[in-house]
Amino acid sequence: MWVLEDEGRMIGANHLPECLRERMAQASIAVVDDPFELRLERLREEYFIRMHRDFTHACGEEDGWQAYSDYLHHGLSAIQRRLGLQRFKELTVKLDAALTMQQASGSTDGHLAWLVPLLNEYYDPMYRYQLEKKAAKIVFRGIWRDVAQWLQN
Image (cartoon, rainbow, N blue to C red; front, side):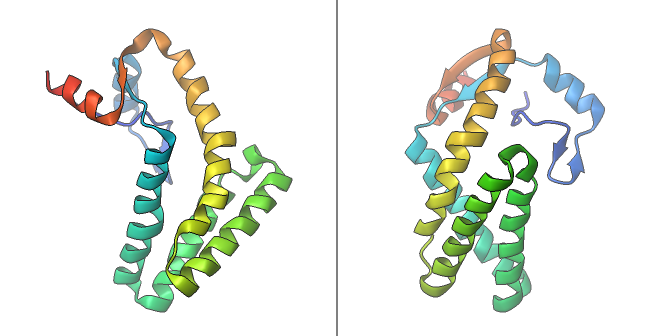
């Protein structure tokens, strides 16, 4: 058994092989429904703490910071058209402020100012819509721990 995150044709700049996409399209779905606050903490750890550390480790302090900042900006730019120009600009201002705060103090709290609206207004509605289209294939739903236990049985 394989466990994969449901993705589109692309993951970043990488194409999923068509044969894998076809198998995924036929597969049953287990949905992880973690509480919003837990998801925020997981994203904070992955994208703002670990990623910053990894870029700094790989590129050095100054170049690593620039690569990390560029990566976050690129991610937001990739969905600019879907957000609309005005919302994209507003979130970019919040991202810039969060990066300034993080660089000055090490605190990642400022990132919540752009991450929370991005989840509420873009990602969560998109995921709900995608899941509604695949509702007949959903065989289990629960928090991460329950899904992991269900998969082991």
